[in-house]
Length: 456
Image (cartoon, rainbow, N blue to C red; front, side):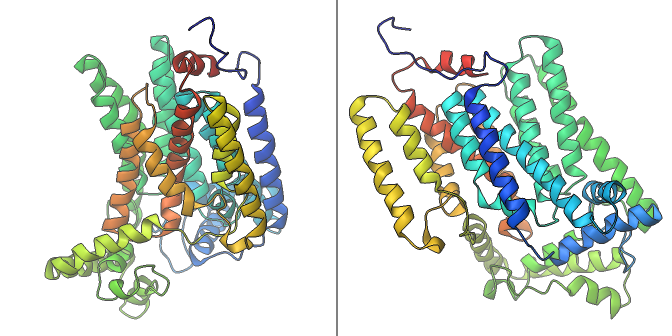
């Protein structure tokens, strides 16, 4: 570093807890406590099924819905609900679930902040952590009884562990971190079946890194070990209980809803025929497996008979998947970005410019009506994240993995259904990309590599 250049970072993690990380944790605790006491969400149909599975496991020791379905949902989140039931009892179970969701969401914020700091330095860690702590989907999911909060927790944990394996300075540390990533990915599969696809980008990234071919194969195998074990074990359980080796029997319904005559008129899935599976079972007399197979068959028949409509629907699904219906949230991600540039950006002239922009943005947020404020929600985070992935300075070679994760989740949406709730599970990728791209401008005149090393 040039001895005449200004210091590049005043925040480091040489101390037990870096000030920037402490700030993230305090803000996250405040937003989660507020949400915990202020939220009053009515459980959705999916949430009620998870609740029923959890109480069934707690009461009877088996995962079974009231209608007899045994493989519709993955087991980890219902098992967690069962533990909460044993912990605090049936009357307090909704509150216990909220508490678990809050802890998982808070830990995800910390994982996101640490990951961004490892990639682009402490300013990126602070920015990513604050956006994540104030991000509407995280707060909504925290109090909705659904499994997405656990999926986010496990995927962000897996990504941080994988990144740690790349940065490890000893073989033992490398394999320990790789094992942690594998366990997290395996548990994610037991939380939501499509996490199997999410593990693929991790394996590909491992295989194309500059290591001897034997090392690459060994690391990829270790990374996928728990995914394979979890998938195989749960598939065998389903074969034993319902007579078919499968991860879930809800895939047919989702595939049918995304590949049918009605989809083009209802791309947002607001009025989709979610009762098709239950109707086949109740009125058609089909078993759980038969209903799932029938819906898969109907979806395939439609896709093969209408290739043009299917291609057009893929474009509709992509548009729906990227858009946002969330409007209520915490202070704007744009404002946080401008604050970061104003205080950490290169050169006094640029700092002054971003300071003025920050002041105007703050006025904008105060004056505008609450429902149209540019607050920290997907409406801004997703497009800014896409831009961030294009311009972020990536010295560790993780940009391709971030892009791979987005592509994997998008592929699931195109093949099945593009619910925005499903995309929330990878919005942390966009948050990290925003933070890394912002840090690129902040560190334009600094020794970025040394700054990153000091931050982790």
